[in-house]
Each structure stands twice: as C-alpha cells, then as structure tokens.
Length: 96
Image (tube, rainbow, N blue to C red; front, side, top):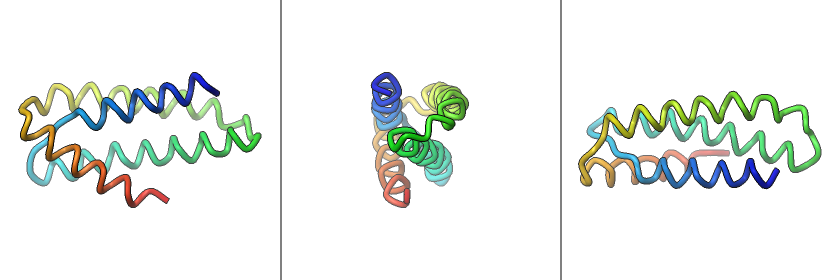
C-alpha cells in the first residue's frame, strides 16, 4: 500500500512537470487526469479493505507511465510545461 501511494505521488509530480500546447494541452491533461482519478479511486477502495482492485492498479500504473513518457517528449518548453500544469490541475479538480 505504501509503495502504491509513493508511486501515485511520483506520477503526480511527474505529470505536473510535464508540458503541452494549445487545445492539445487540455486534451492531454484531461487524459492524464482521468487516469489519475481512476487510480485514486482504486487506491481508496484498496485502503478501505477491497484488495481485489490491486491488479487493476498495475494496469493504470503502466498506462500513466506510458502517457507520461509520451508527454515528456511532446512538450519541452517551459511555457508549455506551465500551461500543461495549469490544465492538469484544472482537470484534476473535476475528479470526483
């Protein structure tokens, strides 16, 4: 459980540092935010005692890592990184 929470923190940190541009920034941030929201919900279920979701956790971790790597290559300027961070924070605000 502690390892999963550490992984989530690392993913969140990496995603905030990533960058993007224009409307693609919003789309990319939304994709990453959706995956992170699903991951958070799975971790909440696991922390409440439902350990059946741990196998799904591996799937989401792999998807987030792949998307993060893709975005790191796609967005490199500091202006794009800042725009992406803002869009990601906004998209994560919609996470319920």
